[in-house]
Length: 209
Image 1 (spheres, one colour):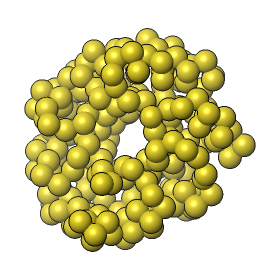
Image 2 (cartoon, rainbow, N blue to C red; image 1 turned 30 degrees about the vertical axis):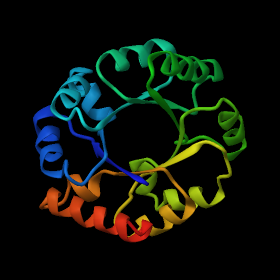
Image 3 (cartoon, rainbow, N blue to C red; image 1 turned 180 degrees about the vertical axis):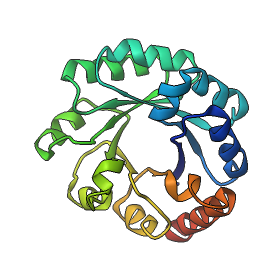
Image 4 (tube, helix red, strand yellow; image 1 turned 135 degrees about the horizontal axis):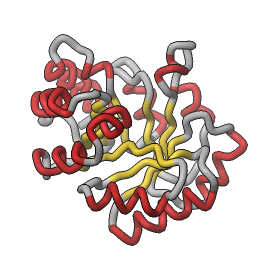
């Protein structure tokens, strides 16, 4: 079953929690976004895990250095999944993956701004997930994660993120992704609960479940 991940890219923890509460019935994974962690610290991860113990909590750390140490910090705060940048040094990525296995949590390597020539090398490190991600600034220039998704051929399970909405769900499912990350299409909607429900229905329709 393809999982639906809610990206909470807020500056205030209260705002993130409010959206998480009204969407919890429709999402599987809840992400403490990078802005939220930078603004509120790892207490945001800790609080989300306490409030939503039945969900996988993602700490979008976007680790660039000291991979093992930062994975450990996130894991101690209650994260089930931690992200490390594919643009980081290979030893940083290896350290993050090794620490994740030691602690029993998952590590996702984010391909934002990573050249195609490096994708197979990252895959060879055997991360739990590879995240095919197009950042907000890239989206503003018209880039779409589905275009990158069409090109990638790896053994690792895939996450797709960046501008995902209900109309893009079918293509992602067809490609065989394990996790679809949705942020603004839910968090910026007038009624986030309703938006999350529509996306969940689109996902279930695409997977036949």
